[in-house]
Image (cartoon, rainbow, N blue to C red; front, side):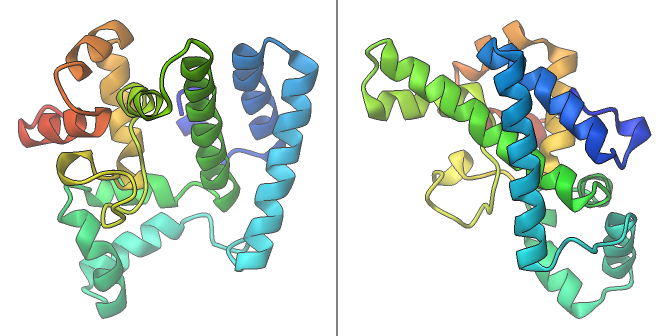
Amino acid sequence: MGLLDRILRPLSEGRLLSAYTAELAQQTGDQAAAGQMARQAIEACKQQAVAEGTDKQPANYGTMIVSAIRQKHPRTVEIFGPILREGVTLKDIELWWNQSDLERRMVLFFEAFSRQVVFRKALEDGTPEAEAARVVKRVFPMYGDPSDGRVGSGDDRALPHELSERVEAFSKATGAVNIAAAVERYSSYNAFVREMMRQGRL
């Protein structure tokens, strides 16, 4: 996410709270409600991490993963091989997984929240539900497991989350207006991203 300062990672819980409160306030127009929502999301993410046993991951987890891939550790290669074939680089993996577990979970929370805002707005404007879902897929890159067909098929499939930093940097450099115009020529933001990767532009 653009609000996160990569240089100062891993971000403290306090900085995450401030950053996400600001982002949510921009979308909701209510600073107090945004702060409460951010605090609740952080607490929920922390509880999920404890329940799933990921709260103790080391700060250099991404670096450790990349080292294991380079050493051809069988299990690591089995896990990350599919996304490497999707165009994810070792640098992408390192950047994503060197974030704290809480940071990664908050990224997922904010992505879901932002998509719901656009989806609900489309419905309020009278857009049929199926078309509203297509609007969301043109406005946002959809991340997840590329083998999960629920997001889409072909180039519309989910993008690995490890690509998110690179996609965001490309989007910033290209500009929101130019991105929106370019995506209109594709079935989804994901299809656009995959074409840009094939062309070597992303």
